Image (cartoon, rainbow, N blue to C red):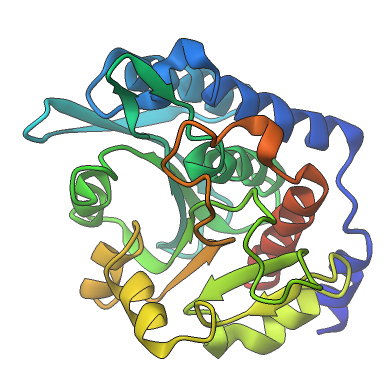
Length: 278
């Protein structure tokens, strides 16, 4: 735990890392990408951008294509083999597709889920030399019954855990109005000691349930978002989120509505925790 605390004590991201998260989020939520609708032009453009970003981090990029009723989907991912003695990986994932365009109106999807993908790219950069085995996957097909996650769960990788990052940029719907600097870690209770140690620097208010509701906690954890297919295969999973807000799935989900100071603290908590699991 002392090692984790030491990692967390230096939690402030470098100016370059903060700028990188902002830039990635802003690019993915730009109207030019038309909300990244699954099987639409914007999602294809997003996949090209993700390819370039993974390559900039030093990875060989891999793809997994699949089909849905809407058309062709594509998962974009990179494999980090930091421990050659182990054949198991921790999957870190975030879905990059969004609502897209409805009636000529773009739904930017900044919080849901450009924020999660921006954190994913940050982690891909920061964890590449930490000595662990990770797969960083930007998943498509969330809007089509988690089709991308379902497809990825069928690949032959040996996964020790799935970590899903979904909607982590807002402070508009805190469980406690006096602590907008919070993070929800569904499935995180078994790892509470490690998570709390990793939080000694970021000092977020951590929750292990969804707004104190057992029913909503079970529903969101076991059925909603990309950890669900992995749970069904018996793979332990944690979902990080800041919850649904009044802007979720609306045209108002723009980069300007997000809290970047808290977002960077959330990103660093996740990083410290993942490093501690090596």
